[in-house]
Length: 88
Image 1 (cartoon, one colour):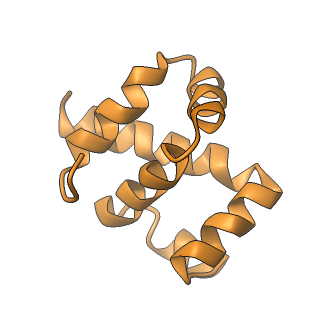
Image 2: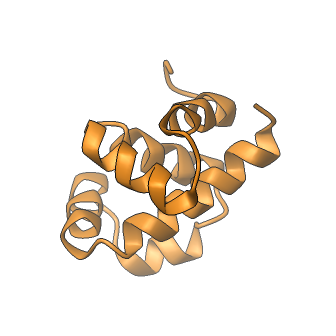
């Protein structure tokens, strides 16, 4: 997967996550950030990688996120790998 496509899926995943109030709060709590920081860093590949890492923690989150983007669930993991960093 190209970095451009991985970045786009990461951005769309962030948008999906931000629309899930309780889940977004859990992400913010686990990342130590706040909504203003996320908005300011929304284009940062490291932030997008952390969003995808978070989403990939639960199969149902992956399924819901992928369905919202009309992509295969495997594309979420592929996007994480395409962003680099980490061990995925």
